[in-house]
Length: 491
Image (cartoon, rainbow, N blue to C red; front, side, top):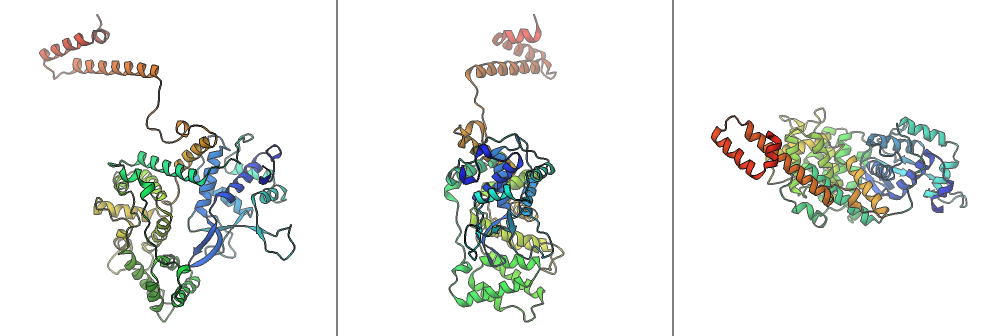
């Protein structure tokens, strides 16, 4: 308990306690690693959407606000508040101008880094160190800028108010393996509820058979100095531009083979301001690579048809949630590559952007060129394939988010495991409800009686049935169920 910075008996009141718990969870659970943005490396970063996922799950699991449903948009505002209070900061990129206040983005392309302070315990001149959870908790309570009253006011502005004295044991931890298994199980369970699948083999074996497509060499693997130089040229060009189209395209180049990157770099027009020529060069190269690449959505082919059926029937919201669950089951490497490609497709497909082909609409050109790189399912008609690809493009900002429904059920189940209860009793997707023998017998008798009464009523009120046939059926019914007959007709 001391490692958290305070004892439970001495914990602050109200929102301060909740905020410190959120900060501790974010620092210990969000994945911090070296990441890239526009071919530039950034150390010790995490992405915005993962921060939202971690905090969302934490709030639901610990029930700080009771059973209130918390919209994802409010969790984004919590993250904004943490950034305003310098818990973390946006990684400097062109997304944020020097004179513009950084805005937190619920996106897998926005990068953030925990803030640093001078290590007061070390001699001057030594490097700054990241706040540990205990150091940050202490700083949170002692800082003159962050008072409990102001934190309480923030919750009020979010229309959320912490419940009285949380009693959750926030120090108990579960292994990553258990957490991953719960996420996997509940994601599949939710998919089974949303999508009508004829066969379950591929879905049930998902954990064992997730294919890993061999990835092209990354910049860190390149040993040829010439290749490294060509990638550096593209990076420098990207850094000098503020065009979203170019940025999205150059992000995709990381997945192209070195030889193609060399060809692109050495085919650049002599006039660097001719962005139209650069865009034509980049689009042709990316399109050529992905026209022959194995499909990124190469798992759970039965689900593709289920989502397409939902779209055909106009059930867009359910289709979006099913798509989010499908992408949650995608392995990390394919998921990241697919995110970059889908973002580039959405930007390039915009009608106001660079004209890709003179006689065709940008949207149709993008769909035609990249469809097979996304899904190539023989059991899916061309019409449904086109519908699915266009749906993914139109919702590229949302398809990689984790549904709030899944967050809630996973949090409840993890809490049950943490407290030693049967996780399948109070949590999870339950298709059948267990009842005791007495209730079963009572329900059976009532249901049988109701159905027999309905049958007798149908025979009696059928005007098309000949009188002789009706008399015969009623006689047979009386012989088998006289009590039901008397109850319906009387003595």
